[in-house]
Length: 176
Image 1 (tube, helix red, strand yellow):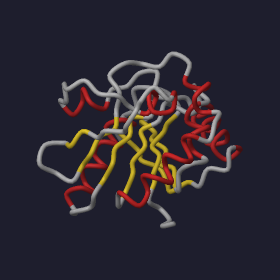
Image 2: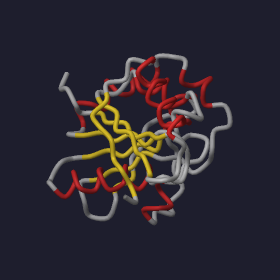
Image 3: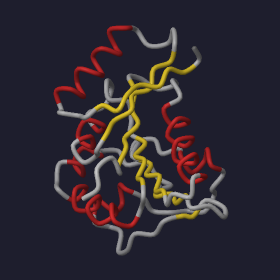
Image 4: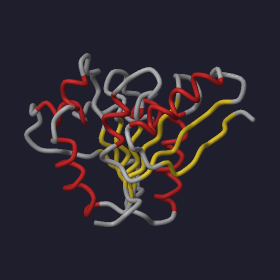
């Protein structure tokens, strides 16, 4: 198993540029001729497809983990080596899906198929979803927007990740 293949992007609260950071990282890796999969892991509020301008209906991580997806299909972003795995509909109780080892099995299947997998998760200080997902990734990048989240929210998010044994890659400071 290759290390540092699966990278999760999270933050303390919405509106800090987490999804934009995930999209930019995935696109930058694809520009370097890496085969990249962007997974919209924010199951309650998927937005990656819309930000990329993809309008084709698709099934994503939530449907895959629920077992309602017969076969996994990725959307290819334009003529690049960037692939997107994102659903069109929100999942209202994603923690029920994240408690099983289906995500681990999926990641083990996907790792050899891609050079990098970028997992765009919900804010870890607000939802336990990101904490449940972080045990299946190699590294976590934490996004902080200057003068937006309270310092206590940032520390709580980082402490929650530490408590979940997340391996931090570093931080992205937005709007600084």
